[in-house]
Each structure stands twice: as C-alpha cells, then as structure tokens.
Length: 482
Image (tube, rainbow, N blue to C red; front, side, top):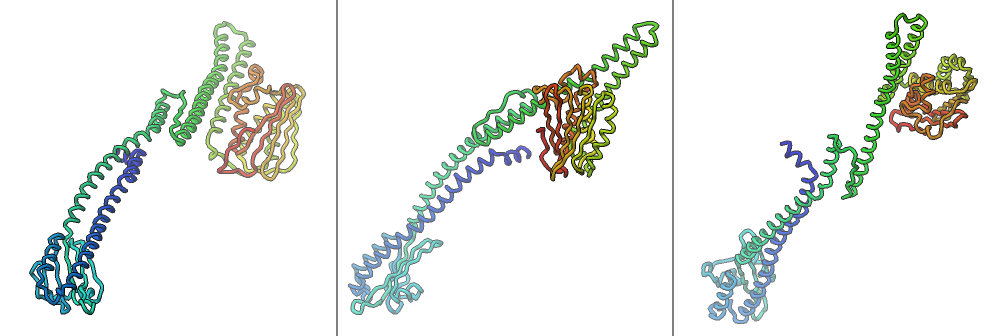
C-alpha cells in the first residue's frame, strides 16, 4: 500500500498520467467523432442518391400516367430493379391515400396517411434516417400530367445495412489504430518519465550521500533543466554553509578543549611541583596556591563565557524584551567598571546626547556593553581614555565605545568577532582574556536585530559602534556586522 501510494504521488506517475491523457484521450475522442460523422455522412449521401432516383422515377410515373393505370410492366420492372439495387421497398400512394403499388406485395390496397405522406401531398418531399432501427425513409411527390399538382406520393424505405457494415469495418480498423497508439503512447510515456526524472534521481542520490556522510565534498552540477540547475545552486550553497559550519564546529571544539585544558595543565604542574617537594616553605606553598587559584578563576571565566555564548545561540524567543532607559543602563555598567579603569589610570567618560528609551533585553544588552567597555579598558595604554557616547534618531539608538588603546591590525579586524580569536594571544592571556567577549557582544546585538561595526588603526585606538532599533521587531531580518 505504501509503495503504491508513493508511486501515485511521484513525479514519474504524474508525467506518465499527463502524457497518457494528452496522447490517448484525443485519440479516443477522434475515433468516436470520425465513426459518428462517417455514419451521418454516409446516410446523407445515401439519402441524396435515393432522392435523385425517386425524382427520376416520379417523372416517369407522371409521363406514363401510372397513377391511373399501375399495370405498366416497364415501370413495375424499374421499381423492382430499384428495390433490388438498394435493398428497399417502394409504396405508391394515390390522392385518396390508397396504396396502389407495393414492391413487397403486402400492403397493396390499404390506406396510408402518415405525417410524411400528408406533408409530401402539400408539395414538399421528406427524408428521415432512423438511427435506432437503421433505415432511411424518403417521400417524393408525383405530379399529375395536365394540372401539374401533387396527385400521388412515392414512399421509399431503404435498409442501411451497408452503411452499418462499412462503419463496423471502419471501427475495427480504428480500434487497431487506437490500440497501437495506446501502446506507443504508454511506452513513450514510461520512457519519457524515466528520462525526465533521472536528473532528480541523481540529485536524490547525492543528498543521500551527504546524509550518510560518505560524500560531503563534491558539489552538485545538474544542469539538465533550469529547475535542476537552480536546485543544484541552492544545494551547493547549502553544502558550502554546512561545510563551513562543520569546520567552525570542529575548530570551536578544538579551541574549547585547548582553552579548558590549559588552566588544568597549569594547575596540575603546580600541584605536582608541590607534591614532589618535601618540607615546602609556607611562602612557596602560598605562592603556588595563589597561582592555582588564579588558574581556577580563569577556568571559571572561560566556562561562564561559554555558557553566555550557549544562551546567545538560542532563538530570539528567549529574549526578555521590555522598555529600558538606555542612559541609566549605560551609567550602571560604567559605574561598575570605573574601579577597573581607575586601577589602570584609564579615564572613563560617558557622553549622552539625548534621553533614550528602547525595547531591549537588559541582561543580554548589559553583557554586550560590558564586554565592549571592559575590552577597551583592558587593551588600553597607560593613562589612556575610554569614551562612551549614546545618541538616537527616530528609528535606532547608537552606542559608541572609543579608546586610545593598542588598536587592531587591519587584517585581524574581520576575525575579531570569531570565538576564541585573539589578536595578540600572549597579551590576551596576560590580562585574562578568553577570546569570547566580542563574539558574545556581537551575538547579543544581532539578537536585538541590530548591527555592530569596528574602526581601528594599530597603535591609535579602536572604536566600536552599535546600532539597535528602538522598537524590537519580532519578525524581521537579523542584523549583520556592518
């Protein structure tokens, strides 16, 4: 049942069905039309022929005065010959509706006042083809010799056996032709369907190969039709993205493993050093334990950042959107970070151009702004500055974080939002960076349908600009890095 349903819903079956309908149905209709028209046309030709013969015979009957003396051997012979040729019957009716001659010799002397006979007496001959009983009936007026008025009627009945026989022969030949056409159409339909769906079969096998995992490198190039070319292009784009995602996943797992393993290795080395020594001085013991505590804190920071990223990777449905005073939000963040800036003699300045209220997730936006400002402090110069400014228009608010720090090389700027990417790994490790801060910040901005861009020159400082809609768009295109 499942196999049958699958076939009935397949493109191959539909192609076959369309070709069968287009090829066979017109053939059946054409056959029926030809046979029906043939019979009607043959009957019309026969009627015309009989009417002509009747006109000739009626003229002879008029000229010989047959109505007053039906004993003419010559006329009777012609009437008999006519009936033998056409396999019919002739009745001669006089003006009293009496049958004066019947070639069958059955109804002679009887009265015949049918509708066709009466109409013929009024001056118009009639003809009729009875399809059900398969006979033709024709009436023709007989005029009087002197007054030239209808004084009698010739009624001729002809069997249409010859027409029926010819129609039957034609139908048999038509059936043979129709059967041949049906067989040819079916074979052509199955062959064409198999040929037409073959490119889709190759596409299916390619996708199955991807699914099974044994063919993930070769691109699909199926250009048989416009549609298959479009599918191939879309598939190759998807394959490229899958490959990039898989590569990114492997790199991310490798980086996570490395980042988590490094503090553990340091702690193990320190612990092994303590265990290997006897009578360790309290000062050395305290120093080593302090180093271990720092590595534990670093491990904890990496784990917290990873958890933040996992939350960011979830859909925007997890956002807790509500109206927030962005000016107050930034003030709270900077108040928390001022001690860190003061410790490094960094001047932290906030400039607000106007009051801003926007629909945001306070927690995630706080995480993004905190990471940007904290990075600006960490990677700054001694006695430098961090300038945070807030502005808005009718649609967006704009947050800029500018610093006088070490700057970012131009070739590294396109990678800074990647997870675990560090411009200067030794310096980052020195100040406790995990390489996840900017990735977290960008994800948070994107989840708000916003965008983030960076402008930096090595040795001259860095400026990050964040643009976020004042009104959160539930169904809209996510922002991208400008």
